[in-house]
Length: 558
Ligand code: COA
Image (cartoon, rainbow, N blue to C red; front, side):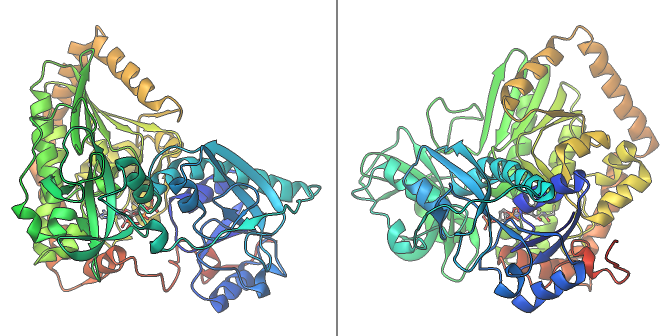
């Protein structure tokens, strides 16, 4: 089938559907929902058999749904209608939720149902539920719906439903003196990553994000108690919550201590070291050990790694490599492994060019520390998505194991033609060949976990359920392998041979020479793209590599 994905953006769910439907032999093209006339033009050019709308923020025009079958992915159970579907479900901490694929009609989400899936609803952030449970359920439901469309004998049924309202800030309001930690967290989770909860810090209005419960520290309800690694701690009626990120009026999302200079006056509440705290608290870098394996987690919001975070993680990695272990597993965070340098903290810096330079050097230092590690075998275990430099930082490890379902974007050019560093020029071509590397960088398309292994870029794709347990088992086997000393010696030899052929410092200098041009050169594309990315500016066109129907030589296949 020729399928048009009509979507607000090419987000991770849309990417997942794009890959899964393409794999099944369908011809996919993408158009961003910019204006009715643009969508109509896309439909006229592609003449699709089916239109799928994975992520829309407004209704499809009647001119399209009245003439073409349009399937809407609604993040709610059958009968649920209207906006803020996930927000209402999470704030009510419903035990089960789902995804419904229904046909577009005049009334929002009221059309006949083509497929539906349900899942147990985790007590987690909206963005996390969306990237995991919703995405998996949507994939299953869309594939079923597409098969049913193709089979031609399925009659979708109308179901009675109840439309709920758009959740507004009044519905999300927080009362720090009266509400418990659990009540506040449910509201904050339901609003994370978008739109956040409107509140105040230091007497100034802002939106709150990235909340983490604190198990031991307490204080006067509503009072700010301290700070740690970008986050501030605020007392609730029965405990306290860490707030990692905020957006001030007219600003962008930033670590709370960066957004508010006043936070410097709060007492610092450091953790004693890198070991994972035995009780819940805010800890962005946490280390655990079992059976000769060290596990290093880095829970960085949105997978973005600032200069400061890269430096702290490098310090933690160096410390971990001094431990009496045989394997270090780099676990990343729960939703993202890494999305490369932190574009928001860069944007907010006095000199974004200087901060870009500091950040890329800090992430390269981390990649280099991993590449030069002689004491352990290293494994990057990608349980969450990775993009741009994050994909190559993972490749710096000796082995990369990736959870089936993870979406990868191992390319940089979408960010204003950024050249990229993280030793990708050293790490990628030996894995996929020079032509393969060029194709990955130029095509700028997402890659599934299975594809990354089939191409030889990563080493193993492990099933989604049980990934963490599987990784721990495989890492323990690696540590217990009688051939371990020989493997470690072989790794040192390989590194020495590579170093003799071309030192890491030269690879790095070559990449950074290009990056210097991106940051300081006459072409401002990277700065412009970064500004629009962090401001979440609506798209004003669909990139050509996605809108295939806009290729100049596009012809409707017979
Ligand atoms: N720096 C800061 N924030 C980042 C980020 C980065 N490198 N990468 C992602 N984010 C943020 C987004 O701004 C968004 O923020 P929100 O909470 O305000 O919505 C959030 O992470 C999720 O990103 P989104 O683009 O919605 O997720 P996705 O899963 O649909 O797409 C990527 C994933 C990786 C394709 C996309 O986020 C991306 O292109 N990131 C930039 C990668 C990059 O160029 N890094 C710099 C070069 S190393």
